[in-house]
Image 1: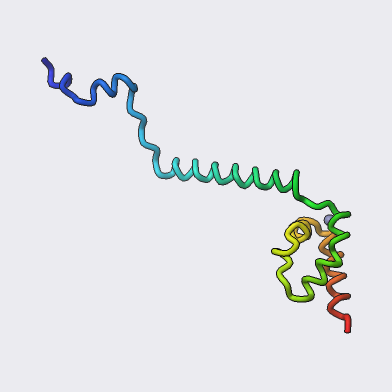
Image 2: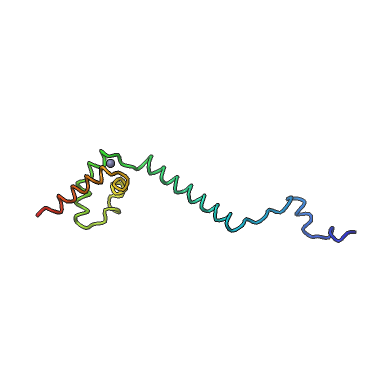
Length: 107
Ligand SMILES: [Zn+2]
C-alpha cells in the first residue's frame, strides 16, 4: 500500500477538490477596498436620491442656516442637508457667503 493512501486529509481533498489558495494580503486588501467603495457609492446614491436638497429648498433654509452659523452653532450637525448642498453647489455657497456677510455686518 503506498504511503500516500494513509494521508488523513485525502478523503477531504477528494471531496472538495484542490484546496483553495489562500488570498494574498494585497488581494484581501483589494477586496476590502472594493467593499468600502461599494458602500460609499451606495451611501452617495442614497443621499442623491433621498436626501439631497435642490437649490430652491436650500434657498428657503439659507437664512436660518446663516443665522445658526453666525450664532456659532454647529451648522453641520444642525442642518446637515444644507451643509452638504453648500459643499456641492457653488451658486448656493455664494448666496450663503453674501448672507453671512450681511448677518455679520448687522449691529
Ligand atoms: Zn444650490
